[in-house]
Image 1 (cartoon, rainbow, N blue to C red):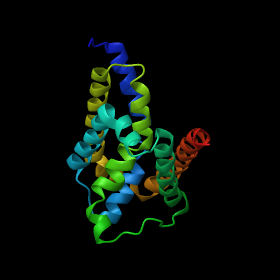
Image 2 (cartoon, rainbow, N blue to C red; image 1 turned 30 degrees about the vertical axis):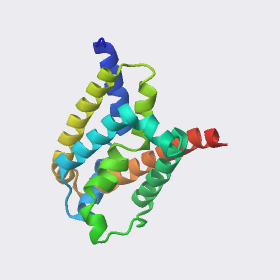
Image 3 (cartoon, rainbow, N blue to C red; image 1 turned 135 degrees about the vertical axis):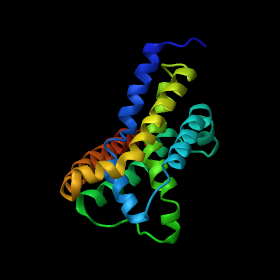
Length: 192
């Protein structure tokens, strides 16, 4: 297996755009506010495990369960859609209780925010163009970036202030809504 630096950089940039951790800062701040706090290292490691696992076993697992990649992407689109509506409209769809507060690091941060349907679909798509080594390295670089952003969200939040966070939340809510609609529309036609 030969390592190509150009392909590695390409795969890294594609994953960075899909994960969009910088654009997720308002969501992360909102989850931290509702859940109390999240464990950045745990969220990063769970995301890493999901992505690497999906790189090597993803297609086999979803086919074993009788699910295709398109159905998986449509399901992820629904979750992203409701998260986006919360951000844009200020309504609460995901009720917080003791259980959801304890699992906020995993759901929704690690999955579906970081290692969601879009990321998993992208990883499957990247396999047709790049080697598993290049994709694995790209995933690792992105997880390091994710960890650094997760660690600094409180500082970023303080720098932006309440007004800045509110504006950022609405803007990225609309972007997330558009991503959810695109993910849905691209994959739903493949189901019929």
